[in-house]
Image 1 (cartoon, rainbow, N blue to C red):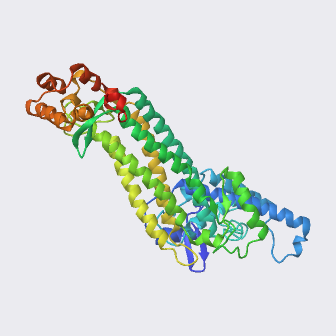
Image 2 (image 1 turned 180 degrees about the vertical axis):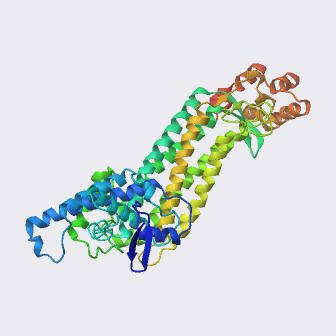
Image 3 (image 1 turned 120 degrees about the horizontal axis):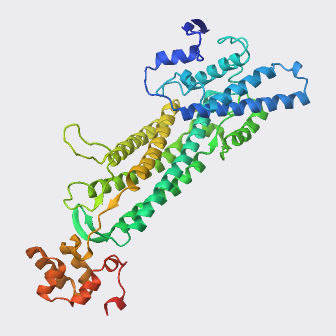
Length: 480
């Protein structure tokens, strides 16, 4: 064991632990088991890498213009800076994540996140320098690993980096799902389907119409998500504690964003008002509202599919892929597990939306202390929604099939509401008369018309073709 000290006292840590006393205090204080997202951890690493690169440029520029030995502070030695750069680069790739022990649910505005990463970087740097873990006289988590940084600019900037990467993943996932849905639309063009309103049989439709409505909704979702990065691209790195840049060189403030842009490939910009970027979190509320809208569309879609593919339809036409055994007691039972997963996931997104809204409103004066929970909920929703799109594409829509029925015997022709298509030609009352005969005698529209002779049989056959039933309205040329 090794002993580390802070101004509160001493704590013992395992000799090989890359985390330190500040991380251990967080573990003791926040007894939560929710794991921190690795995407955010990696983003903290790349933000710190940008800071160290910028520090090196600042040191180089200062050396060219000043005698740095006469300045009131000492620059970090080049070998230590190289070690910090190497360590943060490894963290940005996900290395040493098993030494990140701070849980997702915490207090302290993210200080524990920042210090856990600082301690990892400091100790990995010490190993890089062939020194001992915990020898902070040489590489200190505050003086070196956290140089020109604050929790309050590093952690929200890293959250933005992580969110923008996950937004790109979600955008791709939505578009990939949309492509598969569009294929189903083309495959089942003009295949008749009974339409329903309020869970009751309504006028006829087709399966391509159903899939086209999903395709359009997903297209809107894709477009909205593609705009989200624009809404959160302003970050406050270099702003320090509350956005004023106190104790940070102006050179660093003006340069670090360009370095972060280069390292991430993201269109990140420095906030015009970094006090605003530090204290106000409404950008995350706005982005998550878009995620909620997408979640609503996914729920509507899978609810439809779940109903149409259920045993409530004795003669169902839509067949869900068989994904897994559905019961531990009923042999042969198959459940709609993919729609159920999506519904469960999107309701978690709804709860995250409420959480983000309420905690963003809890920001107080110059800082929001609840950023860790806000960020966790945002990243959670992004990952859930990407998973939903991926599993819908792979495990539902790709293998979803429609059992086609011979048109003349399709159940839509037994539904009295199909007579709606005849109203322009024979009027509402005559159509109602035909519908009554259908309903009272359980006849198809063709059989009922043979009995009543209300409309010419050839004309009826023409009007009952799928393409005629779903034609967008009618013109006077159609009925003259």
